[in-house]
Image: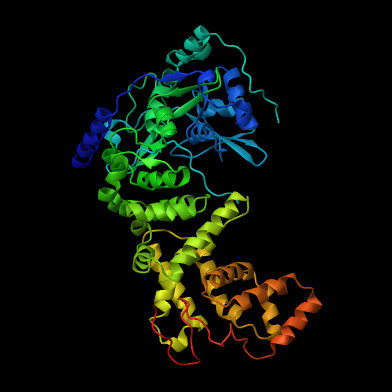
Length: 530
């Protein structure tokens, strides 16, 4: 009872903090979004839903990005059609999800996600304290036509205003969604804990939440004003409930409602705020930004698997270098990766910090060029400092032993697992990348060529290149491996024979470098780190 009383107060505070004006309808002549910038497949879905008698809107981040002039990664659609109705409308559709029922419409490899308008939140007596009211915004992860005129058909003002208000009664006279949803329970009274659309576990945590509503309800399920915009295919207008258009113009990121309440509902919103700040270059407005410092510890209650997903969105979607800066600025890096944050705070200008920044910048360039990126390389970058720190606590003569390196990687990964659920296939990949470094730095005759056949060679080589760029490995060795990959088999054999059977010394002076770039002298002790 105490849990539900607290949840009830939170829900009431949220309701009190949100004023619910009707949408401001911005006609096509007053905004910059053109159909030529919208995915043809998204347009097909929008038009088909409208022809079937349903409301259909582009929604969320794609509308925001189109206004900014960015090409959206995904085009999401919100509609008055129930998921089953969407499936009946499209043969190429599949319904997914239990907790939140969604429709995916397939066009080859292109997937258009269609969501039914949802109610504001669960009934008051079903909101568990630890559960978040999920946001219905774009969640992009890295991924491994009709000709449309910019000129719009003439639409007189009376038609625009009539259709802008049609969500109250349903387009073309169809029964409003709320009535259709309620009709499922006709004769059964008000929905209760046995309601098939709303299921909780024994602790009250929502397992399924398919309570549908109208567009007026749906907008308040979104987090930031900039993400609460709807593009209406009926007349090409934008519906703005929360001042999102003005906030986008001002490059301002602002939570809908009271920031403290919204962050407490779902602490991941703090990471989303950091991600949008890094991606869009927006400024966090007022308490949307200042509340993070006081509430960031709440991320400790977020499931590690969800934090892993958010980490990928932060660092592998084209703005990883800036995400690192923003996370450090708000103190959020320490909540995601405490050992990484501690190392970078201790050595802010060291070689490892430069390696991490340069590696993230290189990853951003790959994303911009449409090249694949991998979490394995990302975590090799982020964990480099903690791994080096563990290695350098061992006697110096063991620094380049593969056993020492593997043990350090495993320990660093276990420490990170306390906050982020890194799948084993990625942590094992990091181990293999680091274990390859001594063999890459000390190629021995034709035995070195066997490294080219290893599945993880390319990942280990990329790490070697980055280390050499920063000064943590010898550049001549990195250049040798670059040349040998481009050479014919005959030339490879000749290059390997030129090495001889003895270990190839890395760089002038023959000194091997430690994990943080300190040069070794034979078996003696290296000078202290600067």
